[in-house]
Amino acid sequence: MEYGYLYCISNESMPEIFKIGIADQISELCNSFNNSDVWKPPTPYKIEFAKNVLYPIQKITLLYKLLSRYSKQINNSDYFKVSLEEVNTFFDLIDGDYWHKDIDEKEEGPIINEIKQGCRNISKCFVDKQHIRHVINVNNIWVGVYDALTNKINHDTNIYKSLSGFAENHYKVYKNGVYRSANGWSECECEIDGNWISTFNLPNLR
Image (cartoon, rainbow, N blue to C red; front, side, top):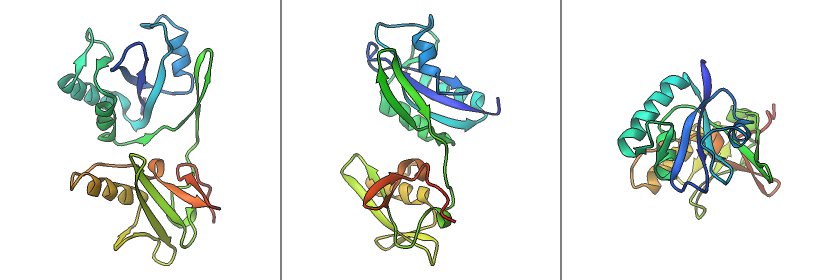
């Protein structure tokens, strides 16, 4: 497959053990695991995160190499004993768009609903002087302002031409100069009528 999803799935019965693999769709993935003969503990599986990538087979091969080096692979399978933070760091290194999810906890386990990608042109997504923010660990927040004249995001004395550049520099400052890639459309929010709304699924304004 040319495009597909890398996913990370957990189960509370298996602390710090994650199932990591690829799939062509995500919506019914957990349901299929919870209702199949997959290695099945007493509690249901849930998706921690997933990422839509180009050439997923190549990407999962790279991911397995990283995981086998820095974690313990269980019985040469797609299960790894590793911290969720480490898995997330490896996912961040791979190009692609994070998949967003709504989770409705029911008796049969999590129901995952895909959210379609929205506007991706800042000149068409935002209005002049609109506030845009990026949050790290809840209490570390940057709030920028969109300038329609320059088509840039201003924060303090810095100017950014993209949401990802804004988010990446926030990580760089937060991590004392250590670079980390970011998907700004997935991670940022904008203020609309006094409420903070994810920038992932915004409509085109013009």
